[in-house]
Structures are given as structure tokens and as C-alpha cells.
Length: 127
Image 1 (cartoon, rainbow, N blue to C red):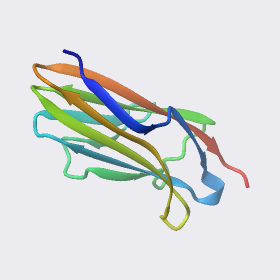
Image 2: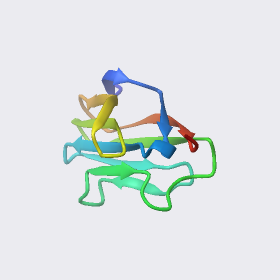
Image 3: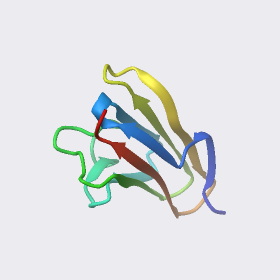
């Protein structure tokens, strides 16, 4: 049986005003049977089950890409039955939540399976 996906909300894209200091907070919670990697378009790892951190603010110093839009991809590998929750929050320049962009739970009822999800970012650099 394929991975079951349940999201509320589930934005496919977000406009991020870098000039106003906006950032995203990525948070992942997962069962031990699930491995994951969140990557930027150049392949850099933003979050991974191989490291102890399970949340991350983006962009950090020197992480603002030259492009006007980028895609971040979350790859999941279920070794057996398990669950992973991915939350993305848009933050203002003081770190307060403007809105929840994505709050998704992925469940694998049995067996091994892979699953991918993405978030497209449209970046504004000028006020």
C-alpha cells in the first residue's frame, strides 16, 4: 500500500519577502523507521534524519540563492510501517509566525516505500 498523505494546510508554493526579513521554519517529526532528507535545488542538505536537529530556519547566512524561485524537496524512506510529519511556517523578521504554509503527515501502513514532497519558494528581494 502506498504512503498515505494528509495535509492541512498544504501550500504548493509560498512568497517569501527577503527584503522584509521573512524566513521559513522547517520542522520534521518522525518514527525511527523513517529516514528523510530535505534538500535545496543545488543538493545541499537542509535537514536530515542523520543529524540531531529536527527543525531549521531558512534562509540562513549566505543561503539566499540568486534565482527568483527555488524548490525544496523532502525525500522520505520508510523501512517499515511508520509516520513522518513535516511542518513549514512563514516567519516575520522577529521570528513570529505569519502563517503555517504546510502541515503534512505521511503514513506508511506496512512494508518499505519511498515518498517525495516539494515546496516552491518565490523570493522577493526588494521592498
